[in-house]
Structures are given as C-alpha cells and as structure tokens.
Amino acid sequence: DVKVTQSSRYLVKRTGEKVFLECVQDMDHENMFWYRQDPGLGLRLIYFSYDVKMKEKGDIPEGYSVSREKKERFSLILESASTNQTSMYLCASSVVNQPQHFGDGTRLSIL
Amino acid sequence: GQQLNQSPQSMFIQEGEDVSMNCTSSSIFNTWLWYKQDPGEGPVLLIALYKAGELTSNGRLTAQFGITRKDSFLNISASIPSDVGIYFCAGISGGSNYKLTFGKGTLLTVNP
Image 1 (cartoon, each protein chain N blue to C red):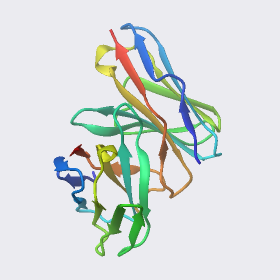
Image 2 (spheres, rainbow over the protein chains, first blue to last red):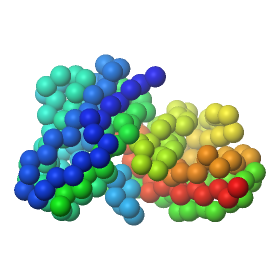
Image 3 (tube, rainbow over the protein chains, first blue to last red):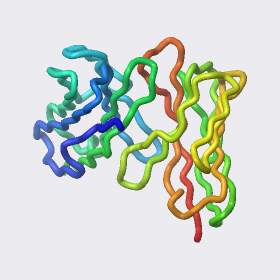
C-alpha cells in the first residue's frame, strides 16, 4: 500500500511565523501535491511537483512556496503565516496518469 | 476551467438503504476516481475507472464511467454506519498527467 505521511496532524502557529509542513511518500512516485481543504470550497491545489527540484503553481499559490530536494519529500512553506491560511492541508502523491494517494492531513490554525 | 458538478450535496439515510451519487462535467475525462474522506482524515481512494462504460465494484460499492466520458456515478448498497463520511468524485483529463479536478463532495449520514 502507498503510504503518504504528513509530519503533523495538528499545528498551531502565530501570525507572521514561517511555517513548514512536511510530506513523505514511500512509493517512489514522481508527482507530489499540496492542497488545502476548506468548508464549501472543496480541495484546492496549491502547488505540485513532477520531479525533484521541479515545481509548478496550482490554483492558489499566493502566500505559499514549496521545496522538493528529494523525490520522497515535498515541503509546503508559509512564508509569513496569516489567519486566512488556517485550514486543513493535504499532501498527495502519484505516478503519471494514476490516482493520487493522500496523507491524513494537517489541521493548521494561525492565531 | 473544468468543473465537476457532484450531487447530492448531502444525504441522510437509514442503515440498510442503498445510496446513489453522481458527478457530471461539461468536459471529457480519461479517468474517473471516487474517494471517501472520514472526519479528520485524508481522502482514501475507493474506485478508479479508466475506460468509458466501465463498471467496477469494490465490495458494496459500484461505480461506472459514463459512456460520454462526462459523468460517473457511485452506488453503495445496504449502507452501514461506517459508510458515514464525505464522498468525492475526481477526474483526470487527457491534457494533464497529474491534475485532478474534484467535485465538492457528498456528505453521507447513516442513521442506525
């Protein structure tokens, strides 16, 4: 089974802090993704990566950056956290043209 | 951009009843997926459909890839309390090898 592991299930940070969310997958998948999920808005793609050191913006990249230094790890960075970034963050991975597999999510609160 | 219209938004049913939900799109998709998300968890893949007309089962779940490639449905037979959760459809289009388009989800509540 594919295992996508997100480093934290719950996280509380303060406005203005730099926040790192980490994701690791164990199936040698080329593609990795970061989403945020908000009530009524569904899942929205923030960034994705199709190879090491490669990244592309998703639908809502503003206020976020990503890093993929190794194939198995994809990090989401909130450069200066704001309250409107309070959300559920989901990481996923896949091979080309195959379904994405999700982690359990990180519920992030920005105070 | 592409959108998936998923219905119904929510359902309240009695244990033992059958459930049906569907997704439609104005665009063609090459792959249709159905996920379930339990409260506080990430989505889990239930069924993947790769071919127009394909009908696939996974236990009490059955899903079909519409012949026009613009729709899909998911049926759950003889529902049980642990079926509670949010069910999402998602599609992969031919122009993308990675990007999923998601429906907004169907919230299912099963009364014992």
